[in-house]
Length: 352
Ligand code: HPA
Ligand SMILES: [Zn+2]
Image (cartoon, rainbow, N blue to C red; front, top):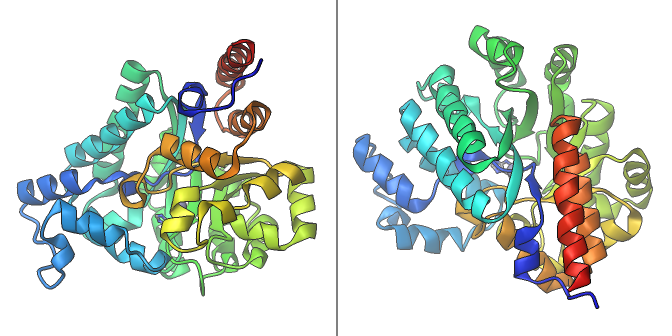
């Protein structure tokens, strides 16, 4: 007898998260605490900033990606010291660890900090300290990815990429990948061809948000023009059957974020996230939280929401977790460890 998957089973699965913006883990509680500590004045003309409760209530009424992004950028204005960045990331790792996270490939937005006078080394030292602590105390392995803000001029992105501090972090291996985030519509991947060409030459891993609000053609451009190894979100792939076949055949991983898609109104409900379509088409994907403090849930909440909407089988979950492990950018040894845990969890669940 094989039990149906429930929250307990989903918690036990060895999860890899590939799409999580560290700045998006800033809970209202930590936001207000750091604002007070750092003497940051939050907008007075927006009543949402009165209390943690009113802010959460506003988060439940996002109307689009851009509507969310204004709060995301205001929120991170409270992050000033290296210790603030460390506290933020540590908060995330603790949540994710209790959700059964084993490996995290996380984003951060250097330009969102350097443009307001916080240095890259302040940001990186805080995040790196939290990653080191997560490895030692929680057994979570991590990879850091610098994301570039696509609403800013491509030449500014290139300048940051080429700056001494950022280059040093790639050379030392502290950061291993680049990504592209922020407003998607009107900022197609082609704008960043030079940036991605240089990053590829430098031996970095490449990913980009594409097909979240933007059309499936942005996914094609991210693959063909930017040469990405992975697509973040990519839900609009389901609108293009030929492209779906291609992505399945080449094994490109999509990092799907179900709760985010509902909260930002890319879909009306979880049932419309193309989970079943991707499974049936052999498209590989992982399930992720994107900005957990803003979208009402961490990684396990996303797994549970998918289970409630789709009633997946143990086999389906094995397929999803295996794709997440094999599509990770960690070493083969780490992947084998996680595959071993997956086999054990699935085997035990089937036996009971
Ligand atoms: O979901 C997202 N999309 C684009 N940019 C972002 N920055 C944080 N989260 C997101
Ligand atoms: Zn994202």
